[in-house]
Image (cartoon, rainbow, N blue to C red; front, side, top):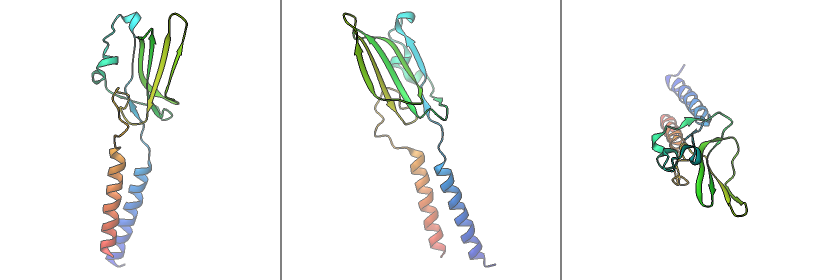
Length: 145
């Protein structure tokens, strides 16, 4: 068999394999901590102000969101939580009379995005790497022909 034809088959097989790798979805990583300020008495908790103290944890495969949930009473933070979530919807609800309770939920879908900084413009590096590999492989295959 022609060595160039074998090389073409190998290159095609490698490209198919790489496409498969790029399509496999890895689990999301989110920060995971919770503080009840009333119970702990610590209004300057690392969970609220210094999330770099923690390492993101790997979410379960069905958990597709990172979230932050903040509960405030009369505009004072009472409960603050960062976690993985199966479902999530950005929202803020206020209820109460005299003592207002506000619960806000913030959702995102990038690794470590629930770190209280905006990550909407962050580029997913793994997608870029997969596209780069595919382009180089395609060009190399066409160069051989």
